Length: 165
Image (cartoon, rainbow, N blue to C red; front, side, top):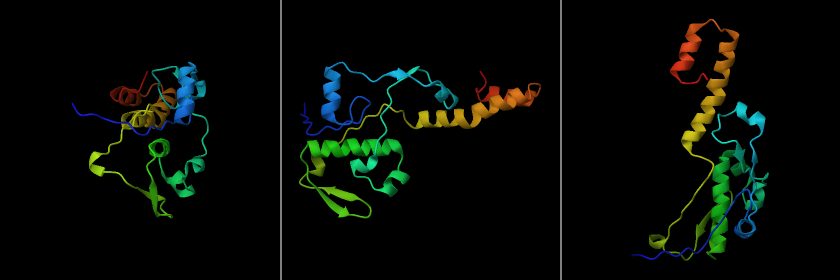
């Protein structure tokens, strides 16, 4: 059996935006769970009725520049911020390669013996597509069907895509 050493951890979660706060809140049994706001149900068909939302974040405090914040997916920003925490927690030095692109290199590590594990609770590509389809097809389709209740073509297309409820 090969041994694994975890040298750095980073966390961005509803009950803590860093590892220490997250862990302290876990030990205190402090959860941040609320009912999903009613108006959110217009955008997705959630299987759960609760959520644990993140507080509003200022990504510049995590070292991102304005262009990165505008161009990157929010989940990518969160993952990168947690990875940065893990790098600092592991006492791995970084070297700035390109200030404009905000690119860094890790110093003093053996790339052959280094790995990264990333987990997310926000869903993956399938969730993204399902939510997008709900927002762009299902809801407009339902409104179209309500406006034209006798049009069987609309009902048939909605049924074909399993969008009518």
